[in-house]
Picture 1 (tube, rainbow, N blue to C red):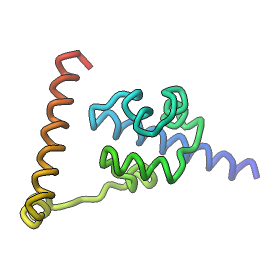
Picture 2: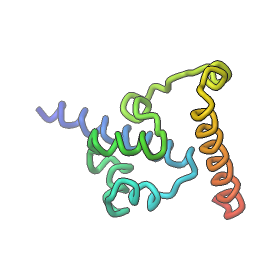
Picture 3: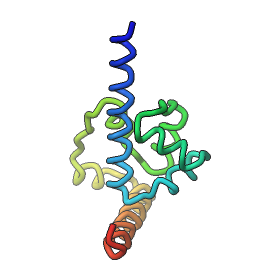
Length: 117
């Protein structure tokens, strides 16, 4: 039984590491993500450290709010897409939304770079 518990804890820690990595890739603070999830920053930190398991509901919120790759967070596998084909085949409104998100993402990166993060 202890072996199963150890595996579960290791899995939870790995999920937390991937959650932290994807948050940083999106130039978001722990406070930003905690606010979107409706939880305190301390609880969000528990998710990243693997001290607490994040629920499916919270993962769904992250996917919806920030377009986090939930598959990657859970499995460690990233979905590879052909971005050119993806964008070319999008309806106009989705393209506009996509590029607005990309612009916000780039601005966050530039802002965080200027702050030295």
